[in-house]
Image 1: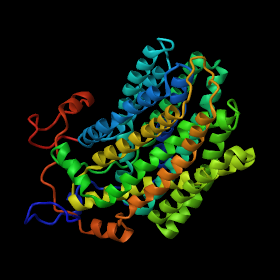
Image 2: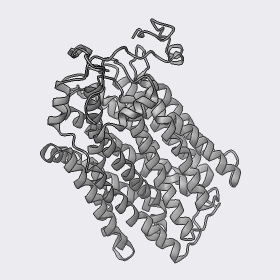
Image 3: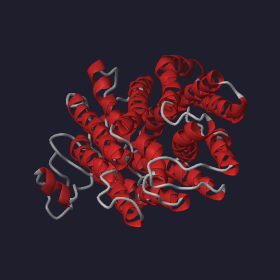
Image 4: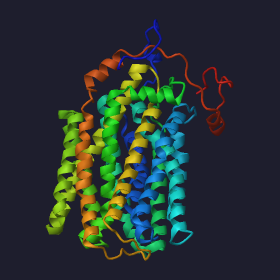
Length: 500
């Protein structure tokens, strides 16, 4: 299964011909910081819809909880189809800015504009308003796919150093935690300061759109001096590329685990406002304090997690972080009888586990991509990250969908006043279980999917030391991308290579 594919009798590859070459050593701090800025965009879009979109639909637009769950789930589920396509297109892109960076700018700006449109509410409340949100969210998710897939693909090409990829991810996750803290904690405050209801959500949409644009532009300019790797060959069709990804056993195991865990994290995000309102009885300040407790520790323990990973390995550290998350979430089921301080401390414990779970999963992904490059001699980071971000996006959409279904089954009553209606004891129990037991099970049990993961530093080094045979010819740039970026192909009929 792990033998590199290729033609019999192919000559050994030289280092220059083995596909993508990456920067061999340590990256400058400005590249660390510049790349990490992109997490302002991914963090804001990954957090705010999961946090505020479901309660916006149920408590402001008056959409029933079950229907709202579908409206949140289906547009992001669309990314399962779009993300691999976005990855393949970015793999085959040639431009003076590299294969990935053009998408950071163009898709990032589109993402900001479309995000603000989600909360514009041109139809007021009711079914038409819900349909508008679904369509706007679908367009925004598509723009996000073309931003996130190239962005996540970059680390495997920025450096070839195993440990440096962990450091790069530590910077990224630190900024991601900051983005989650700012967008998740401040967005509800902006909404309330804007008057709540539809006007408040419009102001909130503009605020988050500004964060997204700042992150996209910062990542584009911050990585302008970074190495981008040599463009090699990818498999000729998307189907063939997906088949190669399926043969990468470490990647398969890591992807399944991360998708399930993303759904668990998303149920926490989806339940914050409901938990603060119905369980803590603090609808105004509660969401902000919960987010500060959840994300704040991540900023503090990130260097500690990096040391833990260096000592015990990324896989063991990922399992440990996941179990910490699960234990904290299970203990939180006692929140109705605990003092507020104990509740917030348990949420902080969940945040510690979340920080480690994110940093090690994202640090292991470039290792899987580098392993595939060494095995096949082909540059396919975009396809792997397309599958990865498709799975992550689906998980982040599945969490609110599951939480909305729990609300529907437990009898949650929607409202179109901007204020939650009075709920029954059964509905409050559904909120409690959806916020605690459900994410604990999803995150904790997902580590069982990691049993086939066997990519150690020694195995990766061995694969990179003995790369695959030289690939036949680089794939041509899609005509639409040649037109878009003004780059002419050396062979207009698509039978040769492109001019980089």
